[in-house]
Image: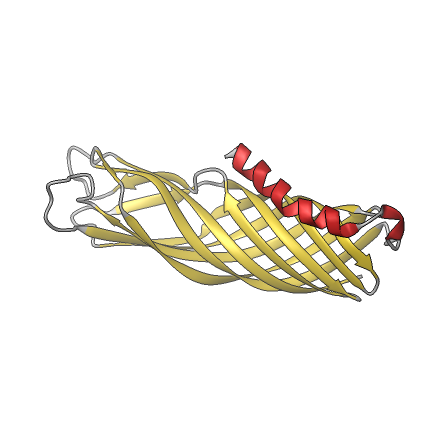
Length: 236
């Protein structure tokens, strides 16, 4: 995973560095700028491992759904590079379907169940970037870095379908760390951000059955989420 992230970063930044030209051609930017942005994100779920009643399931489908977010952010600028962080609130939701018979190669039919979830999380990024083009009023920048998401049970909802006779209860991970790659286009004080985010750790904290069936089924779920977002903001 780390090698893939590093390779992606290098591929994304290399054309920008070439296009940037000598650092002396760049206009100076204020050392500190801040702003606010709002946007929407298409969210998908990526299941890596699901163990249900002692069997590993390996077939699933996902449904990408649209969420939204708002954030305050700041930048610390040098002539070419910058660091940005801030605080945001995001709403993400997704649905995925698993086949309970996918572990059995002799099964002649599917037995699918689905899970839908919606979460509101607090987002804290720590992103490093490069000003590829800096000719005011136009600035083109690329950035990458981690994002911390804090998730509370109070703002996390879910539902399972076609899972009888079980009654499943899921507790999300309280902290999710993601990696982001993005591009920002600024015209005057207005900017547009395009960003992709993928979580690095498991979104599912624990899954349990409350049906009272004895023995209780062994249920473990490993899943990540990915979000492709677009936002509009104003920088001061």
